[in-house]
Image 1 (cartoon, rainbow, N blue to C red):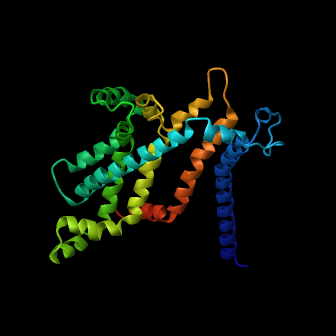
Image 2: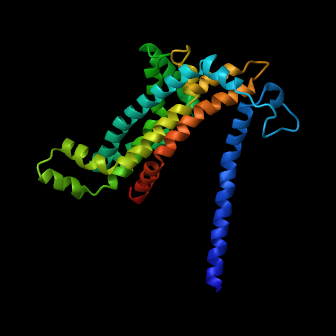
Image 3: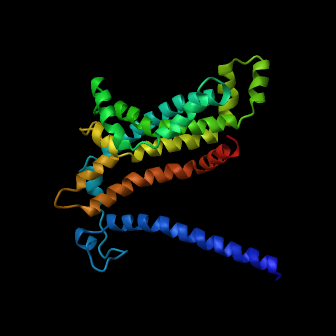
Amino acid sequence: MNRKKFYEHALNILIYLVLFLVLLITIIPIGWVLSTSIKPTAEVFANPPRWIPLKPTLSNYNNVLFESSIPNAFKNSLLVGAMTTFIALLLGGSAGYAFARFSFRGSKVLSLFMLISQMLPLTVLMIPLYYMENEVGMVDTKLGLAVAHLVVSLPLVTWMAKGYFKGIPKEIEEAAIMDGCSTMQTIIKIVLPLLKPALAATGIYAFISSWNEFALANVLTRSPRSITVPIALNEFSSFFKVDWGSTMAAAMVITIPVIVVFMMVQKQFVEGLAAGAVKG
């Protein structure tokens, strides 16, 4: 074996070791959550801790699925996430197309300002958002929370969409217009089909941002009709006690569907990120 092949093999081994380490760092916390979710209370606080419980139980899952507000909060989170994603793609995609295709005064400043707005701590925006939504009766509603979540996702969705649209040669649109398509037909029939992976990546970002958001949901929701899963997790804790078994079971119930959906669209997500990295 010559020196070049030796270095290539050594590099491959190093890469696999790093990937294995990253995999362990990712899986170990999830494995511990799963292990705790099937432990009886006595074993949760066992010393030394055990990965595999001596007496596994599904009582924690029974408590979460049939005796808590998690199922209702799960539906609320799905609805709020879907509304946030749809509005973010509609508004952010339209704005991104405008920034990518049209030259107008202040376009660079506006696009840069959107990213600068992401630097503001979310806590600074809570009070003004609460007062604005309270004035129009949107506090403690799923639509009100979805609109508030746009503060988190819309600027970056717009910026990502701008990069994706810039990656589509303008000549394609010009050729479609010369063939008799209107601007709207060109976007719907030509541009959007080319950007399906990119739109999938952007939509997943918007949905996960909404799904995991806690601070705004904690301020803008009050009742079971609108609370989301991050808020419902507090149901298993009090000032003096935390039901760790039920909390971890709820975490698994909340996490597994998202992981499954992400795995289903993983190819589109990776292609979308790569599309945004090519040009823009």
